Image (tube, rainbow, N blue to C red; front, side, top):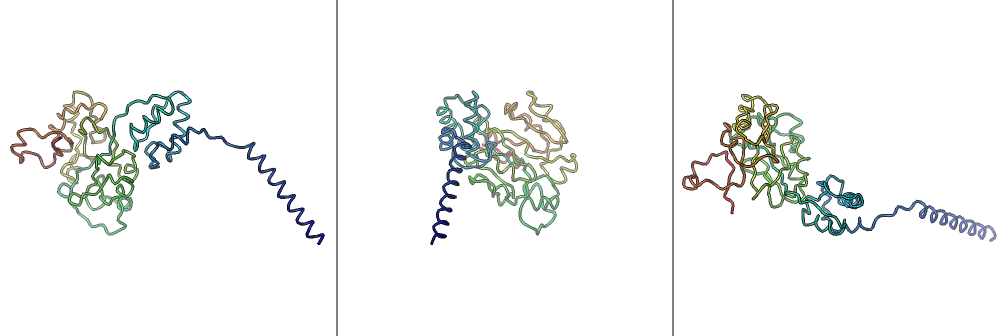
Length: 296
């Protein structure tokens, strides 16, 4: 009986000492979180997409609070919540937030089945990453869209899909949050986050093929051949040609579309521009490679 009583007393003493030690440690090493972090996190959409550059919404919330304490939150934004959410956060933190231009994902490939015919049959794991690791894929172009849908699987917002007729990924401007998940998922780097532009109008080179002209054209009829005609035509220095590939800087482009007209392969695409009157009367004048539509 005495042994049992001693054991109970010993265990009680050990428990009391342990509890005291834990209590002291919790007080001494406690990490106090700024309550504003939780308030900011509640305003964020909790998509945890990583488009802001942080691992999740909690990381962005912490950075925003620290930025507010430092005197600025410029450069920090939530692509999913957009300007509306950032405005609410700025009001909460008592800061001013700069207006940011809407962005959208752009698939820089126009190598449809018609422009870039298949020359092989792939029978392996049906993912872009797997097909890309095996080589050029089912066409002669080792740069274009593989059409397996890795980007579709990565998008949490249903903003991207594979067109069954063209075999190329397409982005729904209204659903895209420019989080960048599709950009990371594409093994060929053909998806780019660009400015939506006024009235959602954009001009860009829909090609990333860096092969020399003859090889590029052999692989795809609408490939950029790096001829430089667009660069010479541009009055705003918005176009550069590097590694046989032209690129249009969205920050410099004035959407004049002169580059589109001189491109011999129709590799430059103009999106959401009104169709000229002469083409409205005669639709057959519209080039099969020109991606244009009427703006309401």
